[in-house]
Length: 454
Image (cartoon, rainbow, N blue to C red; front, side, top):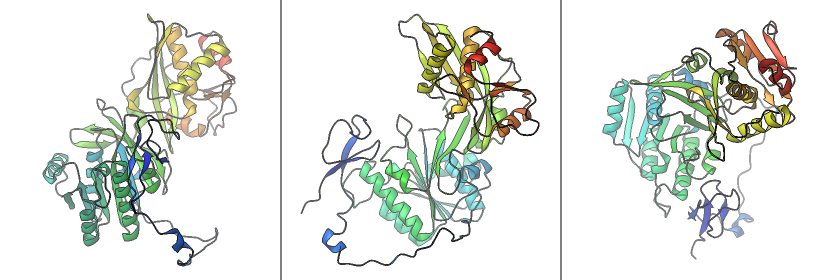
């Protein structure tokens, strides 16, 4: 009997019985591809007759020792992992082409090898000579990392079973192909099968595995989203190719905090750690200009100060531009609507440009007040005092809501020489944090006090 043919969406992983141009689950167009199942699975009639093994049960009071961790010596990398590499863990690293994923993992492989782990680096995109050439450029030739250039999944698993490494790095998962799946390498079926086999192998053999994944134009890891559910940790390597800063961000971590970031700087000798990212993001900030506001944010467990830059100019077009880099465009539209509706400050007929300096992507709502301050500063041509940081969430009613970890934000600001802060009322302040804090209850009072309008 022929195996049933199914179709799945590469954007959300939803399964369909037939092909269609648009996915009913997520609404994406031209994302449904043919999916050949790996196996038919056990027959339904056998499920009721064959008995499996009884599971071992435990209650919530059972205490277990935390998993051991191995540090790489790269503190920013270990921070994002949650403190180091956990045995039998599966890690997925995604990023844009040319952003430095292979460089980062080669440096990590050499550091783990120097820490005493047996490391195998399998490249499906480059020859071993190319990897060695990069290692020489980075000064890693003396590291005991074993290399291989292979895409056949069966040969890779056979080699890993014989060598028994502590860590295997697969670059990349989209180049792997399983000979028991009837589809081309890089297809949804192949990517899912390769990730499933490698993850299960890592769990059974107590071996850690790092998978490199390409991303789509929307910034999501290419292939079915089920891959991100299979692995223990999902990391994104972000940054602008023309900029020297790189951000390693954890969006999922079963062994540590999510949304943690590690900051690196791309140099001629590879990726260098940035231990004080706030100072780095503000290093090129000279005399404050209208539209420039410093935001005290939190990335994971780390306070980070970044600069929001806004430009407001009359538009020659009938439809004004709304251009955003590093922030959510939908949230910018909300801030503009609140300013016009609650404060009576229109942006009709004005182009609005918003940028987060340094290539960092900010997602927390605490940046609302900093964005509003940058927009008003650019529109009114009034500069915010240079020693001031701004943070707070704006509601649709125009009220300012307090945000978490206020004490950590202010501590980081004081460390970098910022003596003033603008924050919402009812913010939880630590001992000594009350000095230099201007607390606002709503956006109207903020506009009236800071800009003399509203």
